[in-house]
Length: 238
Image 1 (cartoon, helix red, strand yellow):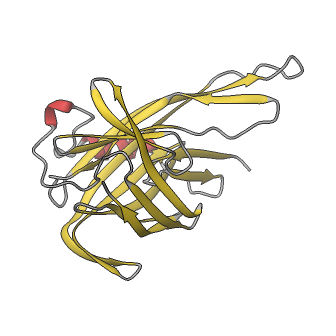
Image 2 (image 1 turned 30 degrees about the vertical axis):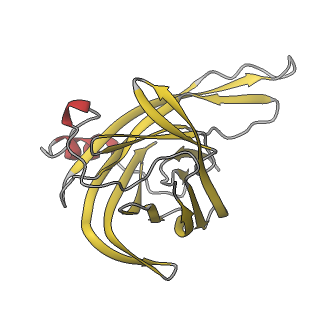
């Protein structure tokens, strides 16, 4: 059975596609998104003023999740790096992938590797993608879209395996602000000032949906998807 994986989203930022998913017409879906005047496409000129901090960034910040795919897992911010003129905070790992988080104005960028499936006898390497996981000033109904491309490379470990051509992929991350200023209870804790964002991930002829909930001054508290879901158990911020 053929399977492709794409990360973060967090979100999850690991999403699995199988041949059992119903294929969709990407061209028609993309045209629908392009016809919406609220959409911008990864343009820093559209950055606005932030309405609060919905994903705090500091070395030592930690979020512990109960994840239906990864189990009980903790994500820590361990260092900072300058990438493309922005300060990114690096996670020890995020949903199984090497990942970073940056914020400019109202926009939160996640930079991540896209995982390729391991193949015996080969080293797997991938290029990075950057997506705008959250725009905290977006009003209910506002949308934003990022189109990304990436390459997965399989390098033979020794001369006993044949060359595999690089695999080039593209995907569309289409986000919509579903709710603002919400109250949501997760694992017995009530969070105020919650944003609800929906992701439609279009890739390989398939659309997959995820819902993300971010609490002000806390970060991601819950996500729900067709392939996996997770809830925040505890967190520590510096």
